[in-house]
Length: 297
Length: 342
Image 1 (cartoon, one colour):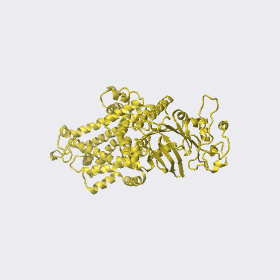
Image 2: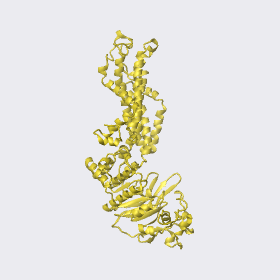
Image 3: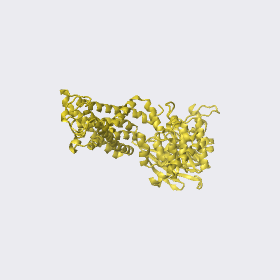
Image 4: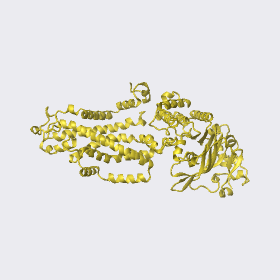
């Protein structure tokens, strides 16, 4: 398969489906996406093969090996209860990625259809909904998350729900804005004129056309979700201990930074940063790849 | 007043009023419009921008956008009053009995679906057949509208095709439903002339062979002369003249129609291009009496005071003018148009 020629010809010359070919074609032309995808893929593999990669049980304490610096036995050292930082960072990938992806999917599942409907029908319903969202978004998101978690208790699902709840207005807004212009388009009029009822027009014709900004925003929000989850855990309101999680691990090591045990916070912090970077690079690239209007580039 | 030809009449529009309720006031976009379309005939609907051509079409399929509203009137399609249909019934009529072809074909196609897919979906909806049957049917339709290599083109997205190609796809889509009525809203604007001619031939061929009626909206009089049997001329939301194409072009009776025809470019005659002085009136504050009187070279006091009624001007030929009706006795000289611009 060659990268020359237009995507259209590519699609006809070979066996691979045109969509996948276009994806590969764009991928080759965009290194930041490649790096982003590589990072995310790397983390996904770590999450899947965590039991094979970990050298120690992430939740079994070992008081004989407190505050060990990084070594062959403990790659990233140990903390005050003898937890192996390396193994915990590995297992925390599962938790943090699950939170990131689940919360983004939940936010999309709420925000996109609601944004499509309110953008399409406008009117009174739209006005009321948008004012409610304004009120919610007036709260600093982290304070809102803290309040909810503090009131309802700590669990992974609650953290996911809270992050989804903070994020869904942004999906709603972008889809609503796109819908407002797309519903006036000629193809919407054409679809109406061949007898499509409103629901099919909205969900089949218009919402798919409003997804470009959502695709670009989703990885960005996933990275942000990791930060929020870590922040919540850092202040002790996120995923309960002893479940390994980057934020709570950073928190565990805060005291050690001044007394010389830098590794306790450093490695989970570095990993979280890398994950967020991966999502951000991916976000930038996805916009170009999935946008069929830029296919001929 | 118009000769009744019931057997042939497919669509009859009676006293249609479509108003837009805007902040500035009520815009009477379509004002007391009546006409009928016959089976197997192509009827041209001409007029300047803003004369209500497109709104007339939108009113027929009941897709006038807010703040517009059909206030009054009846639209009878094949013995059924569309204005009293429920919205659900209307959805089955759109696409099945009435199809539309839009201007700007590329914009009228959904950018996320392949063109074959879009035609196929229309067929699936109409026939209720399986996807694979509809797909092959769609390729046949694309072949029928003379798209080269339809198997391959069916998998193309709208942006991968040229404007002319997209318009063929639109035509294929509109005709795949075998509609009783085809509404073509300036389907050839933006296409180059050779492609234009092909698209027109295609429409003519399909309308004639299927015995459907076609309402062809355009401001291109050349296209009307070539394609249509009848013409309806609209001005400021009203029909000012309608009749057979040959008669309208050879002896236009309404001053506005005369002006339109005089202002087309003629290469065979050495004369300056004339224009109709002034502009289309403000839709909110229409002139009193005959809406055309401020621009009419023959206007007299009566034109300002009283609105002219539709009168017969020939066989199947009606117009709305005080001079034709004989209320004003005056000659309408063709020179009036060339004098205005000289």
